[in-house]
Length: 273
Image (tube, rainbow, N blue to C red; front, top):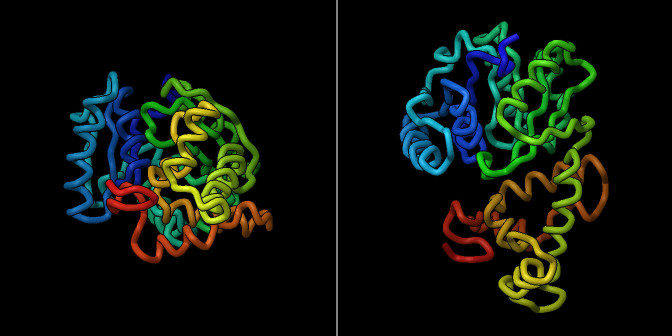
């Protein structure tokens, strides 16, 4: 086994999480990134330059962005980090299964069942969960989900890879939300409900939690940072799995997404950017 777990890693996706993973992996060596379009690839190349410039040891010249899935041939790990949609992920992973028949495959999701997704894509014996946090280069935790269907030697490679990334690893059971999101999203959603129940402004709620509870970012700021659409999708999947009302996204949040207010990435959420 390679000292870092893998010699030729790749990332499928070109959003914030995908590029954060790529920047972190570039500290170890070359990494390939699969973008869905020429426009996405061009934006990804610009963003990795900026991201690597702010990340100690990262090297943008080691990151090759492509729109051709065939360019991932020969990779021994592909981390899928596309939209939080089970059908889209299963389709992507099934395609990667054919292009990279000998590669280990991982996903950054925390809201979808890992074993179930692996079964759908026909990769259950070589597929695991690698849940990272945004911004990936700065956040120290990886929630590592090694389902019972996974071959033991792949678990060993996954652990070596996470260790090489210098992250704190917690191995979590294959349950929707793992640990962080099962605790985090009820708190975030309660903050949204408080806006209506108490008539407070977002800045007031955020000030209470940042200045009074020592949180580095208030809950509404954090929702804007994560993306309101992503947060709604995660909440819907957590609620479907648990049935707990605290996991259901508030109607105010759903309405904001429908109006195109997605947070920082759209220029407006609970705040304007």
